[in-house]
Image (tube, rainbow, N blue to C red; front, side):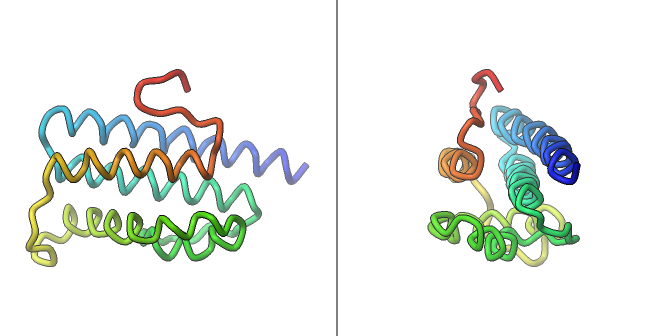
Length: 136
């Protein structure tokens, strides 16, 4: 019974993560790098939490992707290579929420590259997940 509940919870988190992924892409098309970066961070946060919940992790109120990744690599050590991505994208959350903390402006080119790398990250956590407008 517990596994089925975890599966259902994981699916709910993945569903919301997909919505944020689409929001990131839509904002990028509209040339709004800050909004796109924010939703990219939100999407990865939810994918990471879904991955962790799938492994019995107790939900925590946390937004730092690299801290979530610390827990995720306990279950899949190959995810470690995504630390730079997680550290960078965590900054997008703070850039949107706390402007005085970030002096560097985000660019659409940077977000485009991060989306490509993030797709690989998500695929490593959820091998069947297809992004970029493919059937989900």
